[in-house]
Length: 304
Image (tube, rainbow, N blue to C red):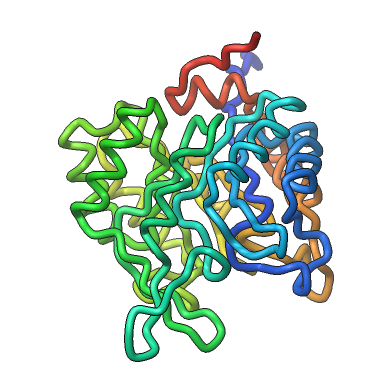
């Protein structure tokens, strides 16, 4: 009997420790200061995360894309870990990020969002090549990334040597600007597409997680793409487990899900540790940061 086995598949585990929505009032485990974020990321990297999705916060805990804050966070992270650093250009739903447009309608300010590109140390940045409306508290917030803005972001990332993380909430987001911009040569393969599922109650145009929805989205990825799945709230565990079975990569963290189980708040480290256990139970291995860079087509980290 031939019992030889090939090497296990390596899986990129992203941790999203903070996000741009939740607050300390909702969970005391949420890291918001640069030092808290860096400390949490160091623990998550030790636990098996190979990418960090960074959101920045002001001293009062509210969202910002201030490049100085991003640079401080990134430097603190890099001083302790070789984890891949991915800065958000989505920002958040409060703080510096929002402005009233007219008649009670608000917008997540594009001029603030794009400051995320300027934070020193980012190897990747999110690129939400679509327009949606977010509902948060008593506000409806337009997240306006028109085709021209999407193209500008892709061109700027390419000029700066930053790899886009194409963030999508629905099938249309894949088939429209993401595919068109890739076809126009504004990213090099492999194209890293992050599918966010389960955000449909907060984002108009987003989709819930179901096995059929995720399967359909995977089947419509552009040639040369690899995919990551972020499940929001209770969708996190089933959506990420399903992603592994479909050959994808995964994201966990308090940005997406504050709970470990019903009635108990999670920590970022716990969510990473659970994902590592699932990856290994399925016969796979979490990627190291160096392996993650190779999988995603990033240059090797240069240390001095």
